Length: 50
Image (tube, rainbow, N blue to C red; front, top):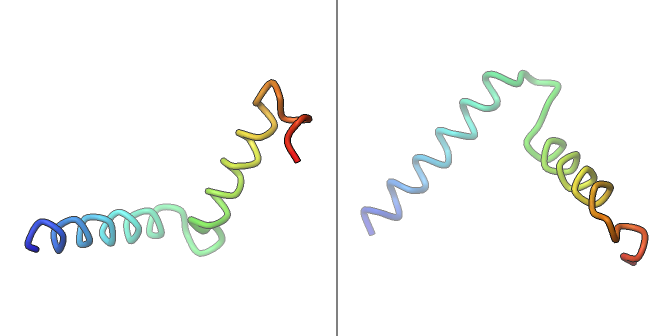
């Protein structure tokens, strides 16, 4: 149980530091969305996906 609490604390600290560095205009959700779109566009079979 202690390891799970430490894991959650590390994730929360990482998100907090990301928000401090990125600023209020950027969000984790928009960054993940951009990464997802980039992955879809760079995949050689992207046009075959539904």
